[in-house]
Length: 373
Image (tube, rainbow, N blue to C red; front, side, top):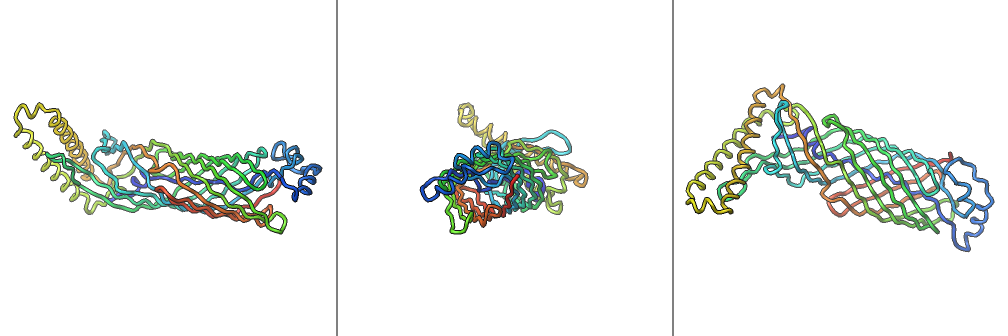
């Protein structure tokens, strides 16, 4: 059983923190008194941010009010699937949540994004994101069924790696505060990622708090910033799709695997029936045995019905379709991040960031250009 586009859709997880490390900084300290005094009398030349001149004259140093950055982002993440339902040729869907088990499946994504932004207020940056991604999905899963002793075994298994392209559009904002080179930023964004096998774009929400410090060099406006923080991602739970059967199964061996699975279901059903019929009436009235019997029959019936319908769909494989729905979530909502940015001057910055711990690993690198607006 080899999954391609369906499994890609199941494990879509493309979430990026688009934070760009510039901020409005409160100038403090006796050695910076000359700079602070000059800000009080300077005429602010730009329309943005709103209240920019008033804030500058109170001793705050503002970044250029507009910018554009290009970033490359890589991420490897595990997610969890629940309430999986699959149907064929627009017929009824079968809930497979009880009998399908996934074994450490993950999605790996590499994306190139463009991020335009403006400082709407001195302490609030807003931005948009446009990106293209190449994603690879690795999955190991199987259909599991019980026997008379409630021991579960694998009736069919599949393992695959699927590649697909995705397009992302996002909107975000970053409230910040900075005093004497120390700063706090609370990045948050919403993104919609579109691939052809989904009925609608997948929605994700990212929250990335960061606490950092900027260190100045001798050259004016040249500095380096370092930070630590967190990365929290939420993705929309509902996923629905409709694809061709030939895009899911390797038709050269699908029939053999279905036949083998049906044989195992029949064998286990015979064992369950033999066990149940061998019990005395008192034993059959035992709630423990009733629960075991009902669980086994339900799982075996579900597996048998699914495999029988799949068997029928394979008879017209070239024209058959698959409909599916599911609930998905990240295995871990949070992971830890560290990052740094080198600012050559107020126009040009270079940034790197890495996320790790938990079940998600990510790396980001980018360049930013800022200008007054």
